[in-house]
Length: 113
Length: 112
Image (tube, rainbow over the protein chains, first blue to last red):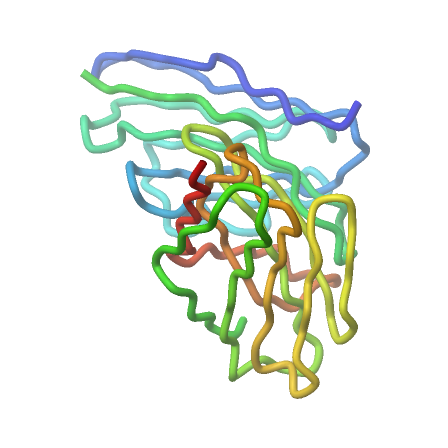
């Protein structure tokens, strides 16, 4: 298995809702990432987990809460989002500590209404 | 990680070679050059990376100048499906550096 699987592919949520994005990989990668991408902009790094521990938080607002329950799963819990949080959320994984490339999922298209 | 400079857009005729340049004049000795591409509405796709030597895989070739201050990604026979934004990224790899930072990239349009 050489893929990163993200669910759901599309999500519409209200500003008072709580939802979660899910990411899964079975390549044995020990580093996993969340990126956010607005239209016509490059992806922006949000969080990095290495060996299931949060190693980088790029000053992301607390309404985004990441979780890495095991080496194959990465979640992003969403609460009280704003319309400007609407974006494509990308998950990626990579081997830890080696020059290997990152494998990205196809993303979750999030719309906050 | 060193900064990179890429042209904002390029055109290429289908079947011809696409040569995408990247300038990274401040690159350090332990920094790798990575190339990714992103086809519209999809996640980025890893293409190739290199440190000093030229590299080739089934997707592309990477040519790095001897002083390492610039590189060129070559798609030997471009197809319409190669239309995408191509990102050149320079970063220290391995150890505890997990950051992969995207710049604005080059929009390559392959024309019939």
